[in-house]
Length: 209
Image (cartoon, rainbow, N blue to C red):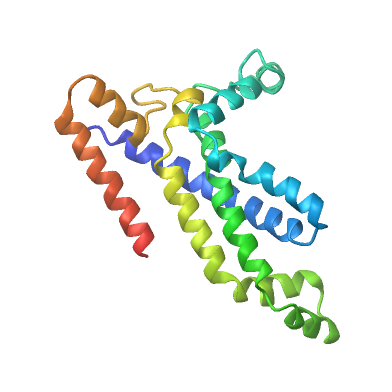
């Protein structure tokens, strides 16, 4: 049994989760402080990938990252880096698809935070950065932890957008999800079921923890 899909899925999910963690917290923190109309517009923009079909998200990513598109052509010409059909292409897909889970959960946590605690810190001469990391984050840790876990689990099981931007190449871009689909297509149900069990086990352990 080739374990590359497990290794590839875990590294993609972990890298994506790190990006989503900081991007989601930053977006949630600043959006929560904006005027209502602007907050509503950004809310729709950041949450949209959650309700769009993953294949639509993948198609939109291809319009941006494809080798003949603006960003993709620039990366290829300037750095010789191809942004599609590589293992790290799946990171773009996972970040976009799983970001709304972190954003929504973190924003809910920040909006429920008691601002009088931050005001008390300011009266003691503490900076906003100190208050954010030493007061706000610890008070909101349950919501942020939940968002991080959900984002990781979603990134681990992502298929639709990943299959479009990274494709399926054994030993190069294969993930657990794309491997299950390819094994099902070739009528290898026994091996496909083993990968399903692996994915279920990891997801259950992460959610339980």
